[in-house]
Image (tube, rainbow, N blue to C red; front, side, top):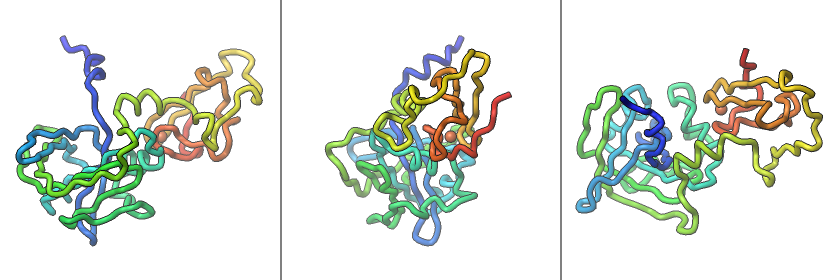
Amino acid sequence: MINFEAFFKLSYGLYVVAAGDKSSGNAYIANTAFQVTAEPPQIAICCNKDNYTSGFIQKSKQFSISILEENASSDTIGKFGFKSGKDTNKFEGSNVIYGETGCPIVLDDSIAYLECELVSTHDVGTHTIFIGKIKNAELLNADKEPITYANYRRIRKGLAPKNAPTYVDKSKITQPSTKTDFAKYKCNVCGYVYDESESGVKFGDLPADWHCPVCGADKEEFSLVQ
Ligand code: FE
């Protein structure tokens, strides 16, 4: 038998993988990136075949990996992780540079990046594994820790922290009288569910600028779960 809960004990990071050139390109968030050899320095990423960035990697034969910091913003995660480059230009409004290889590199919330030249491609069914030889690597911030996928899943499922502008002081909000008053609202962008019974705060009482803690979508993007 396969207990899928066991899979959650695997640890991963969270990375922005970018490919293309100055005329066109895209980036997405990956949690699968790992070094495969030290000499030469090579790294592998696993990319869904439907992923828009996949085509740019195959065409340009290179890709970059930006390592996200522990407190990466929902805006960055939402933009690169939950929106498709087929519908939106993800580089617009982002801090993107072009590296030594000419590959786009996303610097938003990044603490280091690697530029890679594609050396092999492996078809694994739904996904493609790309192996790249590292041509350039830069450390942007030595003091900040990288985000882990486990932290992202655990921490981002809550309300905004106390020091955030969107923090809600529960004591100042009228509490619903019975448990049956509680409802759930689902983010149409990423699927995150806001459960009033967990937070004790009615969705309607959240401030207008409250946003999805996972992907950064506005309140208007939420629908009542029937
Ligand atoms: Fe969301």
